[in-house]
Amino acid sequence: MTPNERRRHIRIDSFNLSYVSVDEDGSIVNQGIGRTLNVSESGILLETNFQTSLDQAVSLTIAFEENLIDLKGRFIHFKEFGGGIFQTGVEFQHMDKDTKAILVRYIQMFERSGTPSF
Image 1 (cartoon, rainbow, N blue to C red):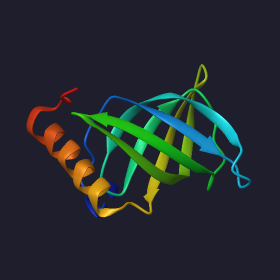
Image 2 (cartoon, rainbow, N blue to C red; image 1 turned 180 degrees about the horizontal axis):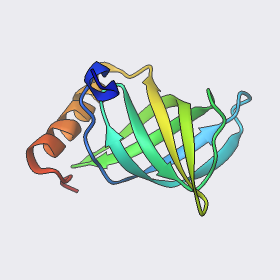
Image 3 (cartoon, rainbow, N blue to C red; image 1 turned 180 degrees about the vertical axis):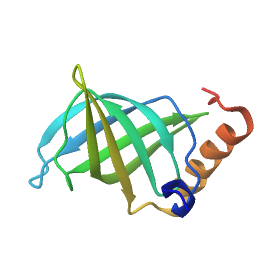
């Protein structure tokens, strides 16, 4: 069994979103636009231009149709690729029912078409 087969949710390729990472005191550490490499109901893999600290909190905003989805999570892993490029894994936390429903629709759009409808 490969690592992808053990995952709870399918990963879907995506595009850009905004992010804000904060330290344990709630102070902003980094903010900007990250490229979404894949997304599932439980997390997202981002390409960013900064190194993260594991377990640091992050707030993400995804624009989908007429909705802005605000997601909270924490960084769980990262890998440096050189040239200031990092792949960063984020695990979602504390998602309410309405936000999850919009996220599921966002993922379904990718399953059907491979690209988002903005």
